[in-house]
Image (tube, rainbow, N blue to C red; front, top):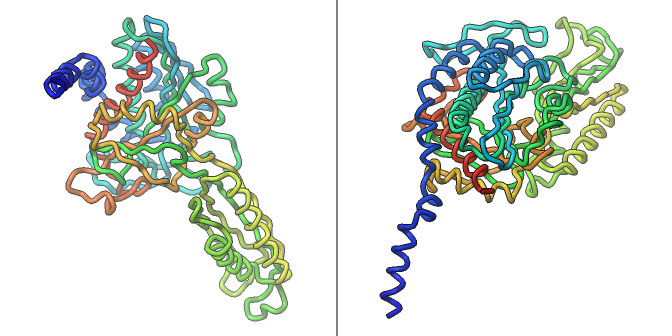
Length: 435
């Protein structure tokens, strides 16, 4: 008789409301995302056309604060210069969560050809630049505004409280060495009176096709350090290098030495590490060896001990090369963001929510990615999970699509709906799970 009973029990289980709820998206998430879809697209296009650099997101912050007030919320503004925060209190007791979006654009001149492409110009660290949402933060703001709008419409039935965090200056400070973004928000007490049980964030990502979500437990994004190396020699005529000390040659030797350092002294089989120079500045004339050469670059690591070891080796390499030539070398390192590490238990808890939102096959395991995110500051304060939302149109190979930060970065707007549904599903599942 058992062969007959078991199929019947299985059929009953599959038909039960509990099973259906566990495998299907929440109707309030699906309908909520649908109700705000057109407005999310409109917000994103408006923000894309009017990008603002870090700590200057004045128009963006006003747009955000005005919409939050329309929802009946009381936003706090001016946090970390231009940040905006608001708390939605549900009609029932429950947990506290924070949802975060970054607002700033990049010093990049847009080349997408979109009808709402940015034509904004600004000054960045002394240089005249174009300004573009080349990383997709316009999408993040629009998605979180959509999520806030949908959740506010469900306020009476909502258990717990949700903090919406609109963060400035994720891409870095206007001037090196300044506190900025997430850390500055925390320093100014954003979680002092409202400490969430968990914090969540997302990022549109050209490396995935639209419709997919990427997530992983543990280290996901790298720590980012901004380093500057100053080599001081002795100026002389270019025709008589032996009369001085050439800082350009010394700096070039140090640069090559750092690449050998990574290749031969660091166990990159354990965790990846990248050491890159992005600027090399020296001299003013073709036949004068200058007194000074300066390099600026970035270090990316996933492990704190490995980071400290590489910095120590970098400093020793620079000083030894300089000493051998009669020059001096000074290395300064500014920690822009720690590694983004997804809490293991929380990731296991919310992965099914992401699968309900887009289908199990569309939630993929991300490798470690050497880009960085100061969302890590929030996730180091309370448990956090960060995930990628695919933004490259179907029919385009994501491996060949212009990546985030490119002047040709082109977001498929279907990713706005995916991101909104995913964040709504995740938030609602978490809030209702305690009841």
